[in-house]
Image (cartoon, rainbow, N blue to C red; front, top):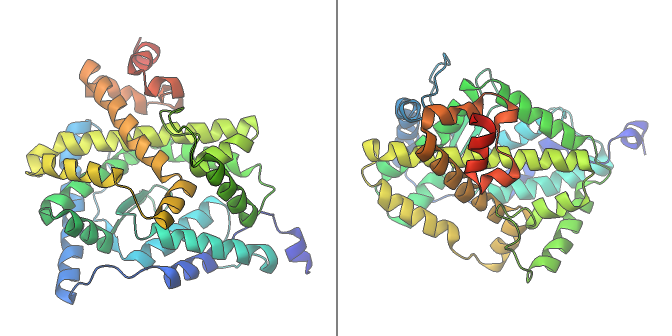
Length: 353
């Protein structure tokens, strides 16, 4: 073993290998002609710009950031972008492989996870890349979803853009958000004495133990899957950081869900139909392999974030209006606490007085 490999942190991941692995494992997207592929990309790019105005009209959030089209990617393209973002977040140079003994196995496993997720992600805003972040839309996944749901394609693409553009507006109008999120991620990384193989093994054991257990203990599913297994073993500082990330994610997703439905009627004629079908699709049971991956990755807890987060935002906005709600973007102390997600009145009392 070389001195470099001996000194390598236990949790190091070869993210370049992860990206390559994901590209090899990713399933092909839906069949499309060259014309269709180009048309989908062009329309998504157009709508990602058009959606900015209705989003800002609903949110009342403004800034001087330029409105640029989303970057349209395929599944391997999303996996590469995700690996690059994770490399940046974890302080690992993407162009320099991690040590052989630890970085490569972890890279292979991370690549397998990214390969799976690349078939499910429709869009994503990354606040950590570029001066104003990067908005990605995964064209084959948009097409696969709209075909499966049999909805009006332009309406669905506009609906998706409303959600993802809301995330862009959240971060560009509140510059402290990205720094706050990165700080939480850095705190999580301070305590890490396991490599990815050990973490995956521990998570799998936790899933087997919990499959038949009562899952109603947490409104956000904090005891489920990867989230629950990690929370159970974190020191207090890291546990608090993870809970704070969950609260922030719940707010960001719930706010985006609220905005896409509030802005939808004016620009998405079939918004009610799409919402109904999309919610049903989220609840649908998957095959056993998909169930295992969903549980390990905390996907069901993520869905709970959408639902509970939207309920929180809907209730606060209905009681105090959007302008007063926007106090939530003023500073970290104004973000909802765990007990307030299910009790919006408590947030109103604490933050708005």
